[in-house]
Length: 478
Image (cartoon, rainbow, N blue to C red; front, top):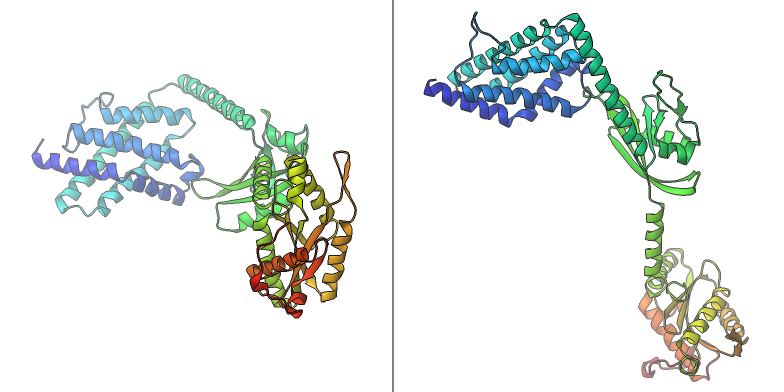
């Protein structure tokens, strides 16, 4: 072999080895244009494997002999490594029922794809001439190998090969049916018209009862069923869009009750990009959603009373103030705690104190509207948000209602316990326009209620009207 041929062979080997994806896309384009894709594999990976096999055989030939593999009248192609690869491929495709005309026709476009790659590579003129001729002779040898094998077998052996291929296909089908039926989550296959063509065991058990909505038995019978309304709408949106898939959450009634599913719809396209139908995968996320809701509830609610905590209170108050600012309405906030709660805790213990807090929370919840918020801020301190207050008189009514409710004893562990409360109130926008200011002024009003002997309520605005100076106030005490 001349050094120049060796260098050109190495250059061509590097080129085809580095552009397998390009070659796969090229042959797919030709197959789609010439309708070969209708009769071949629908999987890109199969085309990628075929290019890898051809490129591997070509590079092996280039590595063994860089000289152009010209043809001779006395050659035995059964001994040629290139033809050996072709013979193996011919046997595989013949066993699948592929005709020699279809096979050789498609191989012409494989050849053309490699020639196109060389022409697009920008090689020097002598390197391009060498590469084009090498590829032509390589594919010539492939075709001779195909023909030698194709016509060397008897009709009897050809039938036997087809029978063996059919058995292999049946075994492969059964394997994938087993996998399909064993998938824990519901799976539906919908045809191009949006009708359910098949469903796995999980889908049948969850949604359809005993009868399958669509089923191919070995006799070829098929019973189709329209997709349910919730699925049909999502399916139409996907089909009409350019998207290949669509994912969404859906609460569905099934045989186990109401469950929440993460639904993935994915278009099934063959290599020619023809729409063949849709696969629907349903993943039951009910327990995950419940866990998320539990975690979220724990993050924003008091674990002892179940009431909103400080974080949720601040969030809701911020929203209430923003809405009031737009509508021109008033918002009241109320702060209260249980009088002498520390003494009760020290006397009867923390467990008893916790029970008292729970009972007090239940009592206060019954005093407010559903649109109001009552939160436990910590210890025995509670706060209320009362949106859409019309007048100060509304606050007096609520304050009296709270004080009156605490005049009844709490029944705890077989004893009646009298516990009163001190209440402070502030009003937006008269007493402040932000969360911190309003909370501070409600705290001041509650402290003033305690100064008056506890078991009463005070409004911050009325304290100021009476000439009260909040700047000298000490921290509030229970």
